[in-house]
Length: 240
Image 1 (cartoon, rainbow, N blue to C red):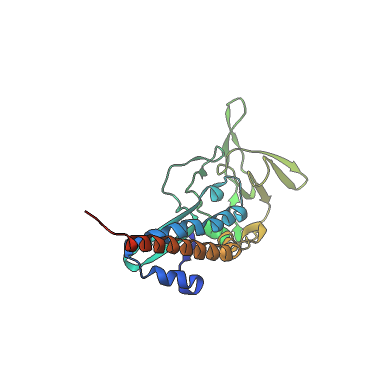
Image 2 (cartoon, rainbow, N blue to C red):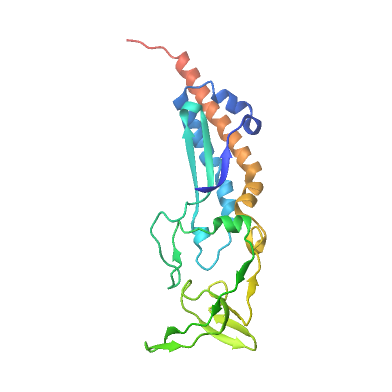
């Protein structure tokens, strides 16, 4: 899973974590895991608030969170981000070859870090087949131009030409079509997409104070309960 990595450190949590190290490994691990599971929830919520929802909703659908413990090292890591892509089942997003599923967010890196400009320099001049509404298949002559579109990717769409511009139905981002008489360049995508908000970075920056506060609070409460239990046990007697 790629995304926010929440690590426990003395600087963030302070005395509760130091006291936790005095407890047996298994006890400390359980307490730390429970605290982390609650602490990373604000980061997960923030990620949902800033994750863009595009034509497939694949990025939003891939959001996930988990806690990984290392009892022998007395450490724990909370992870908030997106599922690793391409491991599970998926279905066609809109009738095209692009798939939809919980692990289809292949574009998560590009949304977070942006993309470079893309040059369209292949002449679309070959005839191709098209299926009409009544089911008949016929050949269409080459477009004799340079084209970028979601045809066969996000599924079928209709095109309407208005002067030199083309509009699609459904509209962008569910479909797009661009045609030029000369090679052209698709502009770069900025970091964070249209909103200029890299989801993972933005979510962490917004939630970090709350994550730290909850973690400190949960660890303190767990330690208090543990100390109470130890006190009760040490003050009891066994008869028989």
